Length: 114
Length: 114
Image (cartoon, rainbow over all chains, first blue to last red; front, side, top):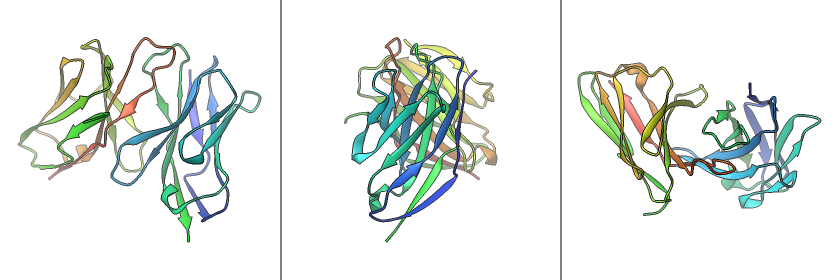
């Protein structure tokens, strides 16, 4: 069985400071992991994905995430927050063999303060 | 048009109305999905079509009826809905059978049931 936990429902950062959004997963096999972003009244946009290649994954808009098997974590980071990063972020876990079974986290709402 | 499109973007309907949501993907994918996104709840997978066959129906009430006439189009027919069905309905597509099925989402239809 798989599950995913986003540890913070809300995160606030000041513009120009680092962003850290935390995600822990549980899986009986090596999963695929994704981060999606959802801006208000928009659909979900893929930020990045991990599929058992490099453990440090770079995504769009300066985001990256590191897969840490020992900690069962896949935290999302960005060195410097921009106002346009304010959105909701979803961590997703999926089996590695390409089925359609996405398991979504409950989301983290990121607020960026001027 | 590129990516995944959904129409209408907003829909208000009474409980006795019949309406349909439309999704179209321009990515050459062979799997399509309907999700429901309600406030303060995780995304709920409703239906999955792979190669135009329904492969998943997550205990969705019969007042929601999906239709997939071809690999590029997906509909969700609605009738006698309840106010608790008000939500954002998201469509997604992917290329099933790959190493990792990355899902690409449309912008959603915001449904309000009066």
